Image 1 (tube, rainbow, N blue to C red):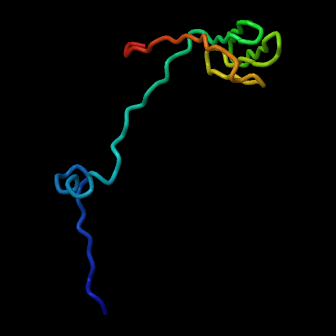
Image 2 (tube, helix red, strand yellow):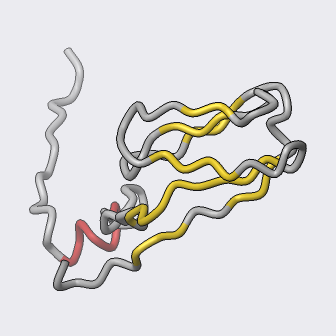
Image 3 (cartoon, rainbow, N blue to C red):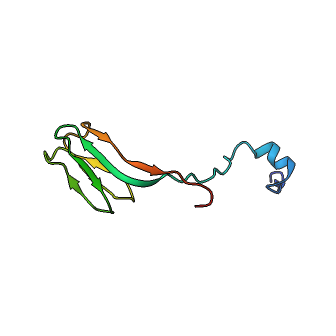
Length: 99
């Protein structure tokens, strides 16, 4: 038969383990919170309509129906045939550690 094989175990926080395997596994990253939406607003550049979505699923089209806004303070959603034809007017609240 063959030679007896064994595995030497090392604790994950030992110096030897970190020297041998510490670079293999990525370090945990801190969770990054996205900025909180204060106002979900866009302006259609075709008809100059300002659209504001106040609450989730508050879906609104502009007068010429080329773009829409949706999402309220939960998420930003834009769309329509003139998707590149709008100006972003949304504002955000900067998060602090106390929040």
